[in-house]
Structures are given as C-alpha cells and as structure tokens.
Image (cartoon, rainbow, N blue to C red; front, side, top):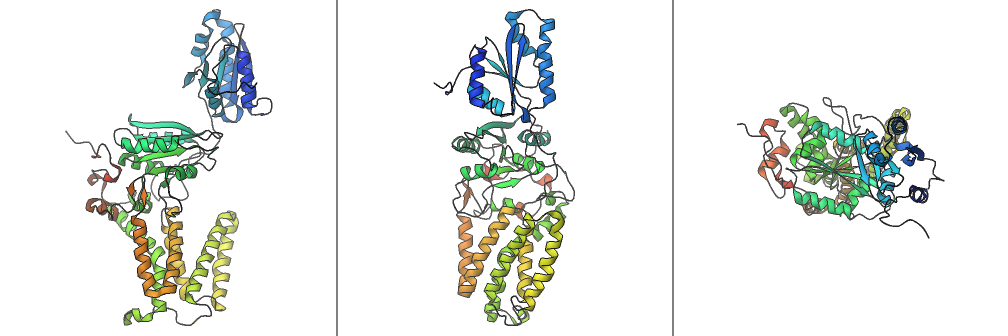
Length: 492
C-alpha cells in the first residue's frame, strides 16, 4: 500500500520520512533532488533540497555548521534545540506535515529532518536562476529609473518594497496549481486598499483549480476576470516598480506571479491603459502635451482609416476646402480591400519582426518598406494614399502605451472598416455608437471600464486630460473605494 496520503504527518522514524520523500519526490530518478545524511551526536539528520533552486555555497555552509556540533556539544537530548540555533539563516520555520515539507522543498527551500522528532525545520535560502533587473523594453523613459521586474517573485516584491517602505504594505503569498505549485503574491496597502477588493481577489485565486499555470500571469488573469471573448484588456500589466508603487498608493491591488516579469494591476479602466511613466518624468505642461499627442495617436489608430474610407467612398461629405482627401486615381483593387490587405501586411511585418533575430530585423524592415511597398504601388495593388493612412494608423497603434489595448483597437478597427465599406455613412454612425456602447457595458471587477468619462466624474476626468502637478493631487481615485481618500498627510 502506498505511503502517500493527504496530511501525512512527519514521522519520528527518519527512515519512514526518507521513504516518503523517495516516493513523493522521486529521489532515485530525479537528479536535481539533493539529499545528504549526517550523524550528529549519534543521531541521523537528513537534509533535502533542489540543487537548481538553492545556492550550493549556502548548503555547504549549513552542513559545516551542523557537523561542528559534534565537536562542541554533548547533550543529545537537546539536539533539536541545538540544531535550530545553528540554523543561522534569515527564515526558519517548523513544519509538521510531509506534504508541506515536500512542497517547500520543490519551492527551493531546505528541509532538515532529525531522527526521533516529529517536526522538520524548513530553511528559506532559495536562489532562483534569472537575470538582473533592467529597464523594460515596452515602458522606456528618457528620465527615470532603469530597473524593472524580473522572473523572480522575491526580487519583484523587494523592488516594490524599496519604493514603499511602509509597514502597512502587505505581500501575501499563495500557491496555485496542483502540479506547478506556482507562487502568487498579492500586494496592497492595508490602510488604503478596499477590504472587499482584496477579499474578492483572494477568493478568485483560491478557487483556481488547475494542474499548473506555466503561462503565469495570463492564466491568473483569465481566472480572475470573466472576459469570455472580450478583446479589450481588463487588467493592466507593468514591468516598472515605480508604476506599480504609484498604483499601490492609489488603492489598487497588485498580483505578482513567479516566473513572470509583469505585475497585474487591479482594478483598471480604459484610461489606465493610456498612461505612461514618461508623462510623470517631465514638467506638468510637457507631460500634458505628451498626453494629448498620445491621445491623438490612439484616436488615429482607431478612427482615421474608417473616416478616410468614408470620405473616399462618398466625396460629397467633404467641404470644398478638403476635397483633396481621397484617392486621386482609381486602382485595380477596391479601396476597402486595399486597406484590409495593407492592414494584414502590417501585422505580417510585426509578427516577422518579433520572430526575426535582431541583426536581421533592420534588413527586413528595409525590404518591406522599399521593395514591397513601392512595388505594390507601381503594380496598382495599393494607392499611395492608402499606404499613407495605413502607416499613420499603424504608428498610432505603436504609440499606445498598452500593447494589449493596441491589439484590441486593431481588431475593432478592422470591423469598423468593414462596416464603413459595406454600409457607408450608416455603417460609420452605427459602428461608432456600437463601439461606445460596447465599452460602456464592460466592467473589470465591478469597475466601469470608461470611468471617469462614463459615469462622469469631472474632477477625475480633469486628471485624465491634464498632467496635474503632484502637490495638487491630494485625493485618491474614488473608483477603487480607498479606505483613506486623502493621499498626502495634513500638516500640523
């Protein structure tokens, strides 16, 4: 009969514990499960660890400290206390069940078993392999910090803690995945974040039943947010610790997932995806100017092509001053189809750039721009105006701070173009109204997606449109229902 069962308690017989570990962890088959037996004051002591998740120098130092007990101690009865005192590490905790001990070992901790004792000591000396913090490629700034989150959850929480040295900052660790047992950390300010929001997120994570979350934060998002086939992002990702810390101060909740360099910010609205750290690294007037340029780019990525197509199909809608808008020559391919083909071509280039090695990406771009684009115009496949407006729309998509939002806008833009191409002015009006109603009905964790535009909040909308100087941003956004609404301490 197998020895594996739920809540298997640590046995006083160290050989029973070893048999459990051999069967549970596959010690005889898995080369990376480390094991060492020591004789301390004539009693057996077993040490278990995963070689790739622990620093070998720390393991050697631990063994050295334990072996030295034989030279300086003689009281066998107090061996557990002596060993516990010799574990000179930051975090040591006792564990009474074999299941928990096995889970901790697989998470990168060290387990120490003593013959005759029904408790094992767990030492947190995990050292995950990974890279050093560096600036995220998708959130670069001219001025500001150059550190960013990595795939190490311990390092990520430390980068956030460095910016918020508040004793009320809470980092609660959970495990998700029956097989992966991935570490998931929920971060929030205890006296700021809404208890209801924190409890809701915890309940959603605890309810996840899955073998493993190898795709890390994306899997967590799909379980927390019931988005179904909605293309618009209902959470915000960031790899910048300063951005994450700013949202914590507002009353948001962060979710860190081990092996992922991105933190999830909850809850979020449509306008959160239009913010960028660069706006807050410049003077308020410059930040406001940058924000307006970004809004124009996002608007162009969504509405420029459908609007131009509407005027190209029905020039009578244009005043005489703008009569130059529209193709000057009739092409071999209908204008609507030209736009759709060009849009797919842009996506081909984007995906090719992702999968092309960096030294070759420049050459690929030159080939696409000079050869393919110019030849397509010469043979009559595209008109120059189509190339121009498709390019401007694509640039607007790349200016969008949130990659997820830019992709969602591209898909909705394609549907919008089809409506205008098929139904003209009626399709344009119906498409715009349907798009607006679609966004109005979206909610992220019971948060209206278009807040503060709908429902309208004048003061919050002013903060969306303008980059207000920090000394005048005294209130936290009401949409997160913070416990403490006032951001800056009152002067005595």
